[in-house]
Each structure stands twice: as C-alpha cells, then as structure tokens.
Length: 172
Image 1 (cartoon, one colour):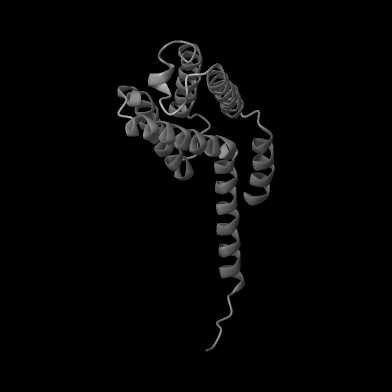
Image 2 (cartoon, helix red, strand yellow):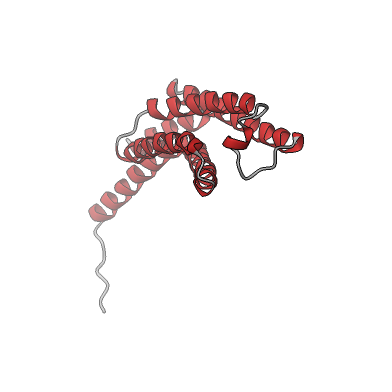
C-alpha cells in the first residue's frame, strides 16, 4: 500500500479544521458540569418514577413531569453543539423548577404524604431526615447550576477566557 504525501496546503486545511473543531468543543465544554448534572437528575428522577410505578402510586406524575422537562433540556444541549449560544433558557427553567420541587418535597416529606411520595421507604423520622438531606443537596446543586448558567450567560466564566485566547490563535 502506498502512502500519499499531503501537500502543505492540504496539511494547512486539515490543521485549520482541527483547530476549528477544538474551538467548537471548547465552547460546548463550558456546559460540561451542567450536562453531567442534567444526567444525574435524569437518573434520580427516573429511579424515583420507577419506584412510584412499582407501587402504583398516582404521585408518579411528579417525576414524570420532571423527566419530560429534562428531555427538552437534553435536546437544548444537543442543539448547543452545532449552534453555540451562551443562553440556555430551558436548562435554567428546569433547574429553577427542580429547586422549587425539592423545597416542596422537603415540606411534604414531614407530612402524611411521605408514604405516597416515597412509598419504598419506611415512615420513620430517620427516613424523613435522609430524604430531606438528599433533597437539600438537590436544592444546593440546582442553585449552584443556576449561578453557573448566569455566569456563562454573562461570559464571566474562566473557560470563556481560555476559549477567547485560543480563538485569537485559531483565527490568525
């Protein structure tokens, strides 16, 4: 098999395309922690939905609504790769809704609805406290992601500075 040597022009074109792809990936990776958090909440809500479906609880509508919203968020992130933007309104809305849900669920976990919302857990103060702590962590994570989205929206994130420096090199 003979190897064809690339001309300098072809090498330059390939190098430029590689740099453009790297730049595109850098812009996309500004949202890396947000995407991982979306995946985390997707699976948490999915497991919660499954536990409610297995116990035939009508409360399954709650995680189902959150999962449907998450699917819209996932599509927004998929679109982000080809059309970079620093505003993700669906993602921000989702995390605000998740934050609100978690606050309401903490309150409800100390009522008689606990058994309907979390049917696979025993109705003990330890279980209620555990659920409250997990929900509180969810509130903190949602709040931090909202802050991260606001920082990215204003182009104040550290990754944006790196992207701009690299972009100057690529666009020469």
